[in-house]
Length: 367
Image (cartoon, rainbow, N blue to C red; front, top):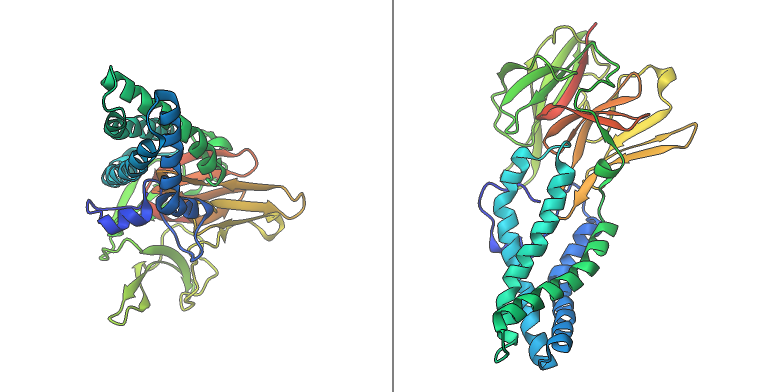
C-alpha cells in the first residue's frame, strides 16, 4: 500500500480503494492498478448486483430491494476497508519481511474476507426485514454473499499480481549461500539522514555518520574522483516552479577498503535507480540484470547464452515492494533493495536472504 504517515485523505482513498499497491515510477500503471480502479468505479456496483441476486434467490426477498441495498454495501465496505488498511499500513511495514510475507499476505486476505462479512452484515440485516431469526439469517446471507464475490475476486486479482518473491524463491536466513565474503554494504536509514555500513553476511552493522539530508528520495553511489572512491549521496530538490534539481554531496571522500568505481564523479548519470551495477569480470556476464520501477517488474534477468530468465517481485493486493539499487556480484549473486529491506539473491539457486533493513545499498568490495 501507499506509504503514509498517519494522514490518509478521502480523495486518496477514493483513488486507491482497498488494494492499490505502493511505489510507482512510470506513467502507464500496472494491471493490478487498473483492475483496482475498475473495481472502485464500476466493480463494486457489479458485485453488489451479483450479491443482491444471490441473497434474493436464497432468502426469498425482492430482487430489486436486495440489489439496491447490496450496491451501497459494497462501496461502504471498500471505503471503510481502505481507511483501515491505510492507517495500519505503517504498522505492517514495520515488521513485514521476506521471512514472513507469505503469512502476512494470507492473514490480510483472510482478514479482508471476514471484515467484509462484518461490514456488510447490517445491510443484509436491512434486506431481511420482517423475517424470522433475522440476525442469524442476515449473518448467513453476508457469509454467502462474500464467499461468492471473493471466489471471483481472488482469481482476478491474483492473475494480475506478481508474487514470485513468495512462490519462486527459497528463503535462507543464515545466508549460507553467500559467495562474496570480502564486501561491505553501505546503506541509508529510512529517512536518509544516517549512513550505515554492514558486512554482506549481515554482521557488524556500524553507524558511519549523519548525512545531513532528511529526504526519503536520497540515493547513495560510489564514483571515481581522481583515483579516490567517493561515496556520495544524491537527491532531488523540488524548485518553486515544481521542477526538480539534482543535487549531491560527498559523504566519504576516500572510502576505505573499497575498489574505486569506474564512473566519474562528474557524470550526472553515475548511478541509475534501476540499472544494475555489475562487479563481475567481463567474461562472467552471461546474466543481464535489472530492477524495475513498478513493483511488479521487480528484480529480473536473462541469460544471454541459455535464454533462461528469473523474476523476483511482489505486487499484490494490500502490499507491494518496489525493487532498486541492484548490484551484481561475482558468482551470479545480487544485492538489492526490495521494499525496506536489503537482500541477497542467488541467481542459480533462487535462494534469498535478508542482509538488513534499510535502503539505497551500495556494495563496496575490499581490495
